[in-house]
Length: 515
Image 1 (tube, one colour):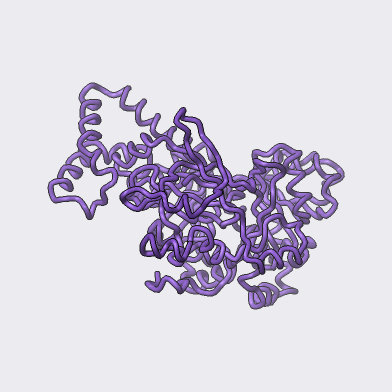
Image 2 (cartoon, rainbow, N blue to C red; image 1 turned 45 degrees about the vertical axis):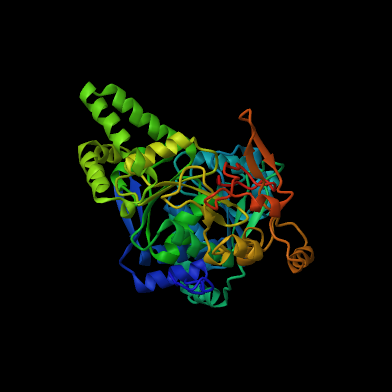
């Protein structure tokens, strides 16, 4: 990363353009691993780009217009990202839909986004689209990844359904007569173009389609990589929904720019088993996942013998001071203490949850008990809390691994940081820095373009998130920030803001990560 905070160290390339560069520079390096029938299959960067091109060309052969929208209704798997990148390679825009959504919610998103092609995972997801067929006037085709059970499909869509394999074959055939389409599209593509649409949770009304540009993605990727210490050697298990910005930033944004590896397991139900097999260097989990892992360890220790329980209790007590002290900051005696307990018991527990190689672990999207954070840090898992919004294209602030729990981290982009309190007041990065860097194209896609242009000229960006406070009685209190200067000046002796807690959503209804 560049040491100059004013310079974005990443190439001025869009995500599809960067995918092409990775395929040129590292054609044989593994980009994606997917587990099929218990066996992990590797996909190189060359395969990633080639197959994405064929998928994109296949979509154009089905009638996808330039700038047209493609819905994806599936759990995390390689076909998801092939569709997303394929759309980008031919000038389309991917729109993710939660596979757990009922048919009415699926219909709303697909209709609101004017989707022309839908890529479904299986019969269950296809049935949701068929049920809402009358509400989708722009729909041209339905692509299905797993066609089992579709032999007796509805007659209204039987001639519009094809398998994902057939889509790739169609793309190969289309390439013969449109050989330069992908290259011409990439040559004309600009950072200001829309990359994908991510629909918010709709906590204050109907879900809103946040238009994420390639400039947004390139704007946040350096800060995320810097704060989390990501590199080309990073490996990540993708299992949270890809229609959420949190998983997008770790599955597509950063890996494609950095050239790191992403793994897709068989199912969200096999996450713990997949973790043990992959042992990723980075892991993102919502609080419920961390609580489940904590419970699994607690149950395992309760079922063990008295000697194992005694060793566990002694290890956790001896290593508790190291929870917020980086390895480089420990004394020789402290390093020796941790090494002893690591080889006696902590290493086995890290292997049990599959995080022995984790260099950073993240939690977000809801409040997490401080005791859970303390537990995993004591165990040797560098768990940190991060915060972000759909409108901010993901993580914009996060803790360092050595921070104490419930401490607000710094902005992830260097240009949003100020060296001291006085400079922070003058620059006011918390209010304007993120908006200036991300250059958000707008919120709801149905707002009038002139309104959006005037809105940007006035310097107004996305609404700022509500503060999340806890009352003396222990209840959560969400409030809008009314006096930013006064709030910003309320700091403790270490210069850390006092508004610690978490926010589950922004005032605009955007899904978010806790502070």
